[in-house]
Each structure stands twice: as C-alpha cells, then as structure tokens.
Image (cartoon, rainbow, N blue to C red; front, side):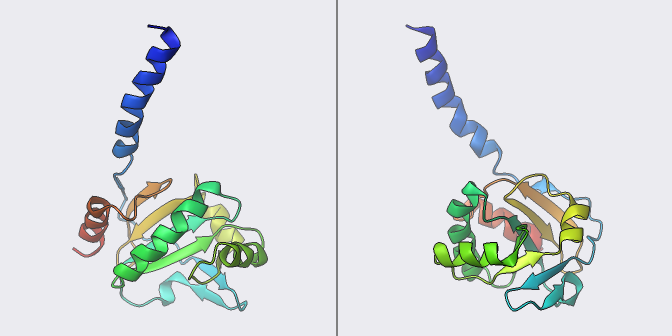
Length: 165
C-alpha cells in the first residue's frame, strides 16, 4: 500500500479521537476574573460584576472567525436550553458595526456585545472561539479553547456539573 494512503488512513482513524479528547473543559484556577466591561449595540457599557448571582459562561468570538460562523447558532440554541446559566457572547471585533453585521448576515438571535479593548488585551484570549466558565461569584472554574460541542449531551452535562454544583 502506498505510504501516502497509509498516512491518510491513520489520520482518518486518529483525527476523530483527537477532537474527542478536546471536548474536555480545562480546569480554572478558582481565582476571581476582572470586572470585564462590554458595550451593547446601543452603545451602553455593562460590567461583569453587575450581573446577578448566577453562574456565567463568557464566550469570546469575532466576525472574522470562520469557525464562529458554525458555532454561534449552536451556542444560541444551548443558551435557550440552559437559562439558569448567564451566557455572554462577547465579540472581540474592533468595531461594534462588524459584530452587528455578522449577527444580521447569519440571522442570529443574539445581542451585539463588544468586549472593551483594554479588557480584551488584559485577558489575552489565546484563540477564538474561546469560553470561560465562571461561578456565581465570578471565579474562573474552567476554560474551553476552540469550537465547543454545544449540542452534545456529554458536554452539556459537564458544563452543568461544573457551573451548577
């Protein structure tokens, strides 16, 4: 058998296993996160610490992020099915107009929220999409880099166990 065909077959066998391994939430350091700020589509500033005593999921994305196009509809569906968790999809776009355009173009049922640039720089989000899981008192319980499997029951159970314990 050709060496190239062998490599392709090995990749086809192991690639799904690699993506399954990524479906775990990385443990957080339990430390409080900063009081992040963001702007909504009407130009009003909001702060993380203003949100009530509810566990939070902060999801960082951007209009230029191709994987975000696939993931955002699933996150929105997940949010509707898990309303006891506050979900904030925070755009890292430079202008709120980019965020609004993305939401309109892909017909997404979500608010335009743009993370404050200083807070974005301070957080140092390593990749988009990227998700932080916070306790009701804003402590970092976990992180998830990349596209999360929002519609998989095991992943939802893991998120719920982490945030609603």
